Image: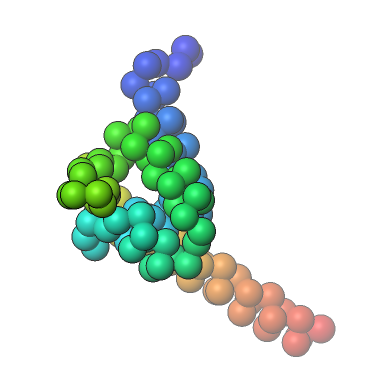
Length: 113
């Protein structure tokens, strides 16, 4: 079955989210618009790294920038992104709960031996 253009688009979207700093940036921007300097301070990451990751997010139309005087302010393009991040967090939490259950079961099994 051939890959459709829509499937490629979706894969590119998720690929743009597949970097830890980009996730941190998006989680921060989901709470409100920030400048590069504010993001740098909030994330404790050097300015060139923040700018590089924002550039990738802008190229995929995930964040938008607006200029206020000499400052560029970034925000998420679609507020539903906050919902996506929230759902992902819930999925990860469920996976970790399952992992914890397996770990407890392994520990009980080890004690019985």
